[in-house]
Length: 93
Ligand SMILES: C=C(O[C@@H]1C=C(C(=O)O)C=C[C@H]1O)C(=O)O
Image (cartoon, protein in one colour):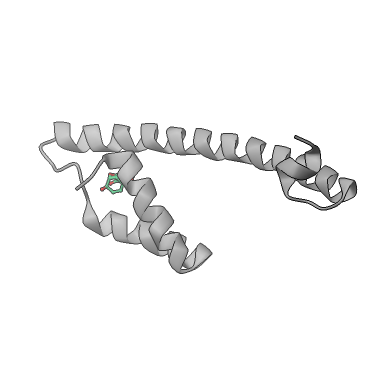
């Protein structure tokens, strides 16, 4: 397969731009995944402390704050993203 095949570009110049930009996206995705894993670890500390104190794993008022934060920054899809993040961090409710 040629670079143009793989990228969908019709010229070698466009294929070069796409290949370089895809490398940056892959690096960004690795960082995003690392940040999500770090978030989940911090979230687990909070959840374990609350459960050990006799409380519940989930705190809905805090989750509303998190959802609002993402919605304000990213619009409607931000809410969907935040819901997925919450599920990754505390499991399904
Ligand atoms: C981390 C917490 O516990 C749970 C997980 C949350 C999260 O990952 O952001 C938010 C609320 C809670 O359901 C918290 O209360 O802050």
